[in-house]
Length: 246
Image (cartoon, rainbow, N blue to C red; front, side, top):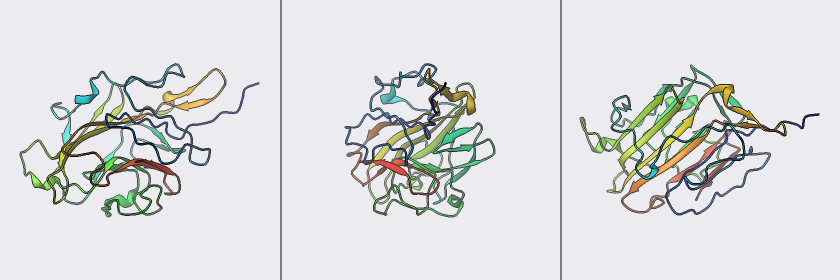
């Protein structure tokens, strides 16, 4: 007789090149279970069939020079409304082709449809979880950036995205984005592994894992990564469950 299945709520992994400070909240049944690691040398290996990261090196991984990458228009305080190409499991919900993701120049993206008219900065305490918008949130480095500082046709202080049909990975890169009214500059990426039910992986004990991995990758900054109280974390659609890295 099979054991009960446990679905991980969007298996989340953060790949960090910065010193590890710690996740503020540990995974529980209430928040959803997930697995995290801090180095490229420590990928999940406890379930056969897990998708793997693209080839490294991750310290300089970038899509900026890829001719198929799309560059966002200069910042106008509005997140880009992006239609996802494949299914993605996140905090107990399926997001399917035709659903929207909002890509913000401020270092986050969200499935929250309110993001078409709302442009928040992380000024709440705690920042995550918090029922205020944005919810359904994935934030590699949420801050108050200003990509208008460099006009067209510049390729720096910009945001890029690329969907790879073969791997079914969406990559978003914030390349040398400048902090509002400061000279500080950050380069970082996030990848989302889409792929539908093909990536729900069952182990020998009947436990069901989600292979829809999220990776946060950090390249360079002109000061320290937490100099501007930047926020790293994830949050569900209610804003009641989530964790942030500090």
